[in-house]
Amino acid sequence: MSTHTTASVSTHILDTSIGRPAEGVAVSLSARPGPGAEWQTLGASATDADGRCKDLPALPEGTTHVRLDFATEEYFTGRGAAATTQADVQQDAPANRDSGAPGAFFPEVAITFAVVPGEHYHVPLLLNPFGYSVYRGS
Image 1: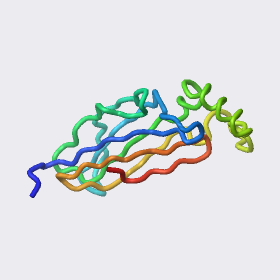
Image 2: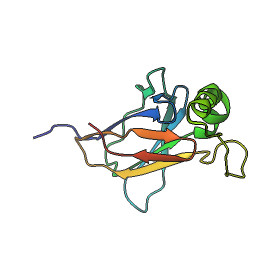
Image 3: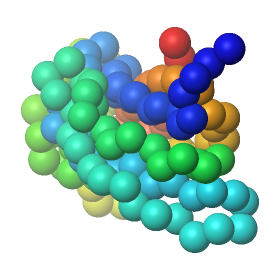
């Protein structure tokens, strides 16, 4: 039986357009104690060279829902511009092809999930200029 009274969260991002970790993506962590409750921002971090956020804050006791907000627009238009260009060359696929929008097609990604006390939730984000996928990792 677990003695932990809170859940814990970690994440990492892989830029699947280049097959490498996404470095420098700002990540915000929010929590709430139930479906109708207000979101409380707990803190923020940024992904390291390995695409990981190792310093996300602990969740308060009673947390039932968590939200991770990823600032992907800055990654694709700033720090990730060189990586996106590299992917374009490799795949012959311009970063903004058919999007009609400047910058990132998905300027932010918000992932909301339910948690139970005592469990750890690793939620990886697989990201590319025109899509993303998430899953519960280990």
